[in-house]
Image (cartoon, rainbow, N blue to C red; front, side, top):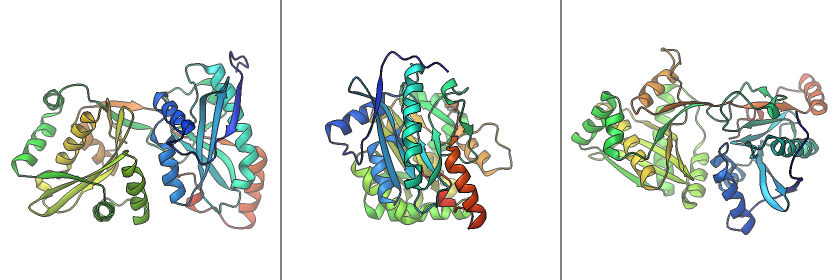
Length: 359
């Protein structure tokens, strides 16, 4: 890898950055302008993660006193040296200028290795939104066994008019949206703490039916309280004559809106509440100025008998563009890794909270 760079880059610990401060606003503009980053590197997401009890390390890179990159890292507590310092949607680097990106990455590696002991971590876990293959500056990073973010997804471009989006859909998707309308399904938006509890009830039902693990109620209360008030999160409910048919949580950051959580109840499933929710969210995203609707997880090659295949079949009805990313990557601090292995052999294996799934 080249050590040449046009600029000299320095690093600063930015601490708990107020998004309304001048530097906080600079950071948000940087994230919004970086093609490989996203909302999980925002100061608002960091505030949410602090509320959930995670340790947060915010490092900024400066070129000639101008903020040009950095990363917000998250670490679970009490990992006894075997945890991961995770940067979902990061690090934030000038990927179009690889010498500068390399210099900035080296500074981040040096700084995080120095902090590793106090944070109880043995490695970095990153997930920049980069298309494969991974750039040369990341060749020392290995593919992680656990994903921080979805590395296979689907983007729906929102520039066409709504009627043109409908025309571009598969006939079944278009039909089911119309069916939900004929049945009288309505979609409302709410962002109160009552909404958090209602949303959680829906997700509990979905998790039990589709057999996946679910975050606790406190997670959704904090997420809605912090991110709705910041104007990032929106919660939608599909209803029919007082019956709750489903719910959807969308997060809008810059020109991308992301379908983050959602599902349908077991009530009146033939009324197509899931299609009504997606169509309402797509139109709300478009009206907010978003250029892309991210379906957050889509694999057209998933095994037909897997639950992921069912999600993907549903999402495929909207006819977006399949997107592959480099995925989640790990970099181990060798000196700390040896200590972690010894500790694991003499004590206990690290809990799931230390696995780096802290996005």
